[in-house]
Length: 68
Image 1 (cartoon, rainbow, N blue to C red):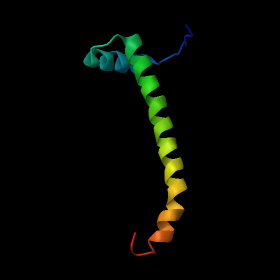
Image 2: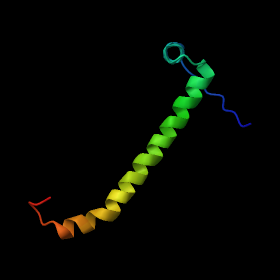
Image 3: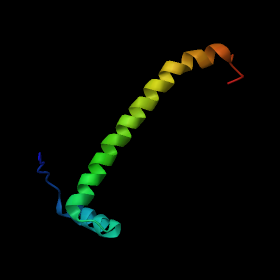
């Protein structure tokens, strides 16, 4: 399975450990989950922006300025 070695400052590591403890997960699982969730969130936002860009011209054409 692919792996990634990431370096953190002592303060960053302490914050990650604290968040993992609050979430009830191991540090490794917490960092994995947060990383994957952020990648998925960014992909969703990029898709939403693309879809909005696709439909916006039609909305602007159907609803004149002042009615949007």
